Amino acid sequence: MGLVLGIESSCDETAAALVDGERRIVAQRIASQDDAHRPYGGVVPEIAARAHAERIAPLVAAVLQDAGMELGDLDAIAATAGPGLIGGVMVGLVTAKALAMASDKPLIAVNHLEGHALSPRLADPALQFPYLLLLVSGGHCQVLRVEGVGQYRRLATTIDDALGEAFDKTAKILGLGFPGGPAVERLARQGSRKAVPLPRPLLGSSEPHFSFAGLKSAVLRAKQAGTHADADIAAAFQQAALDCVVDRTRRALADSDGLTALVVAGGVAANQTIRAGLEGLAGEFGLPFVAPPLALCTDNAAMIAWAGQERLALGNFVPDPLDIAARPRWPL
Ligand code: KG4
Ligand code: ZN
Image 1 (cartoon, helix red, strand yellow):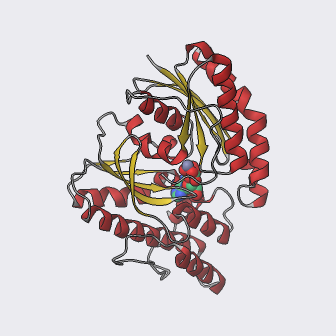
Image 2 (tube, rainbow, N blue to C red):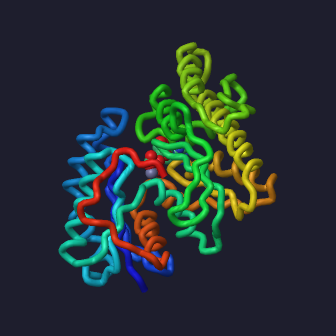
């Protein structure tokens, strides 16, 4: 009942998914562009936009075919409208507009961060508002109080790098290639987290924010010193990052009342060490800990379709206009 098509193209994954009102992911496909960006050690916006443009239409057709559905079977078409690499966002949003126009179905322009913020509710029907969300991805590192659909209060953000960015830069320094986060996590398993002294920026600070630039520079110095094993640097970095994340989230939890859960989402939420540390923190506050399954942490279209479902279910739903603009920046 109630089928929403989701489209995601804000970074380097081209993705389409169908999600129904009972939280079933009826079909989904993700085309990763890792191979296209690997030679450059990071996502190249122009290459990403072109790859999205080539792949998006066949991907949507394939998802509909997988589900045995047609455009006419949809209740709405949701697409990421920002924030992200603007060329890619435009490809996905324009595709959604064309499909909405052709099928006379409502368009839902979704904030990518809202997709991440609501993704835990796709996987866990029991998760109620308000919850404290740690949103950690390649572009963002924020603590949000999620009061309801469309009601997000930002309590903290990073003053320099995002957490995923710190993982990616560490991977680059250690020559681990791209994408960096999972590679750092793998190598860290073979190292000692105490072997390399690294700073923990803003630890214990009375201000709420995050900072990772100093940690990244220290990783570079440790590598350049030539006296540490790469695995030890990776493990020490991951531990320092975790300590920062737990400390900053603890500060936010201490200031926030009436919460139902501590929730983590975004690409870095796929990291097992980060998950385990946050689970322990939730326990300190007697709160349930919720983290989406790994495939829903990194960029995907099911979370965009789900954000569309949540908007549809609000009751006072109004479709977005076909001239709505793609936005490179769009704070929640
Ligand atoms: O949410 P996401 O897929 O894209 C953005 O919206 O940014 O997050 C991607 C980020 C990248 O920085 C990637 O290195 C990081 O998430 N990441 C991880 C892991 N898997 C992905 N970081 C640490 N450990 C992981 N297992
Ligand atoms: Zn994302």
